[in-house]
Amino acid sequence: MLIDSHCHIDDARFDADREAMIQRARDAGIGHFVTIGCDLETSRAAVALAHKHPFISATVGVHPHEVKHIQDGWYDELRALAKSKGVVAYGEIGLDYHYDHSPRDVQRTRFREQVRL
Image (cartoon, rainbow, N blue to C red; front, side, top):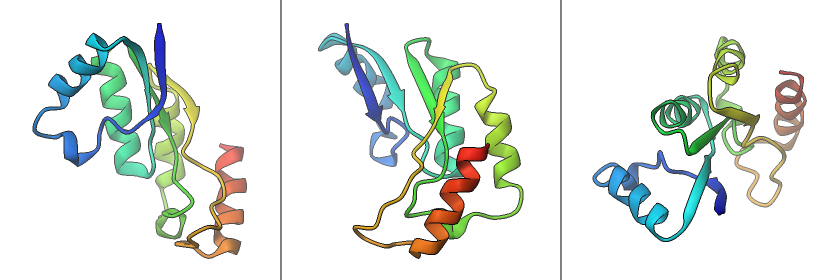
């Protein structure tokens, strides 16, 4: 069985044919997917997909590009989402100094905070 260990099935580009896209991937031999949360909205969407399909797992977290947008209450919701059926990890978290969409000091702080979740 092949596993797609990092995908973004919730991406808006799939809104028109998400279920058909999933079926095409399964027909091509993908037996399991891990869809990745990059912010609070996509973490919610990843969890919803994991609840809908037993062959999809989810991660929850805030990507380093987006950590400058973290607001009060986000970590509480991420903690709650992480306890949901089908959630296998925190992600997409870390440091990304290639583009510096969020300041490096903010990335370091937010990465430490997310690891502590």
